[in-house]
Length: 237
Image (cartoon, rainbow, N blue to C red; front, side, top):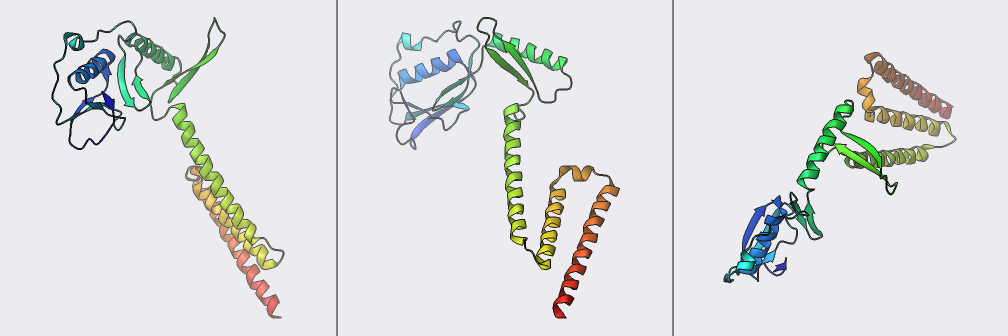
């Protein structure tokens, strides 16, 4: 049996949803391969299913008793399931017994740490090798430490890019004359205003504090306007 080869537009497609117990997965692959040697397995276009492509012209071959014999679970595969497929290989679950131990450990861990929202980390040391390991128990696959770190890094990158853009704008306004200084103040106030609007804590401020900040911006704008008018009068004398 080949994997993901040739044109499949005229093939008969057999799709079996995952997960599947490891022995069942192996038995199906063996049976289909024995009955249809020209059949092809999916090449990872669906990771949540076992997919076979059988040419419409293919004629089923007689399957021997050995090929038809189901694969029995052994100590290595008992309780293990195939949960996804990909070009790089199979994604397997842990054994049922080990999973039960992890569930108990996770339950007790969160019971001992009631303040934990998403995850708890434990550092353990191998008594034989003294190797340090970190065990992480997470409530949600969308809020694991890795997922939260990726979100934080994206937000930090956006914040750095925004700050760099404002700094570039401020640099373009710097000048020794009065008009340049006024423009610089206006740019700085625009920067502060944008920063306050982007600050999530702004909504948590009391009404008095927010009103005071707005009033300060208005007063500064009035002062800037007077400065521009004064500069205009000096220039006309």
